[in-house]
Length: 256
Image (cartoon, rainbow, N blue to C red; front, side, top):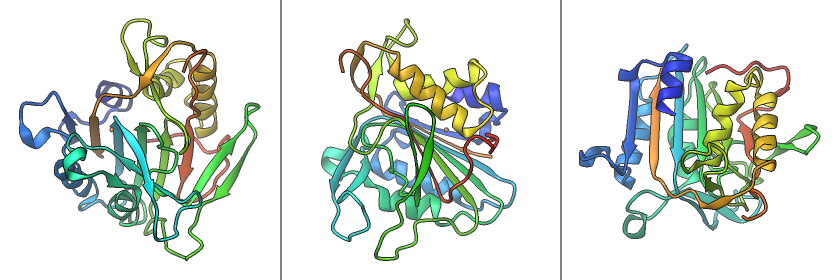
């Protein structure tokens, strides 16, 4: 993904912060504290014209929601390297850290390749698309009235699957090495000329996954990239699109 962001979209390498379990620098390991600090770094000082990217590839999960702001009764989470001792990072915290502070004129894209990741940014609207490409925007604003949108900026997220699904690692896509299915399909959409609009990207990703066999299990790598301007018989996951506000997915041009 780093190569894709730099070489396809021209993000400067010195504006990319990458956390991975392969790093020898302990401050670049994707621990809970390091991911939290990196999320704060991503939005700190952002201003009109800035383009931010949060990319996460790793374990995702769910836990019971107790404040009533989830339609299905569960919070979505990402699992840092040390989540078994330090706990997971919950969607409420992700939203409060990188969504709500976004000022007018700032754009955030999140790419989340993890299980149970459909609404992991807690964005207010989810694009529910069928196999024919028809869609409606589901209103996921909490009934209690809590604000999950931005402070005037734009936040859009592509995720690997719905909240009740798992995301797979598979070698059936690249035929070379095992990779996160969502990550591969997102990049492939652009390589095959389907990157013009948000709708064409989402439709292409879903089509690629539907036509693929040979899943090898849940995404297992833990890689976090932040950029300041990151089953058998087929893969049983449906990439999702969420946003701070609804829009025409086939008319709105994609742009980092």
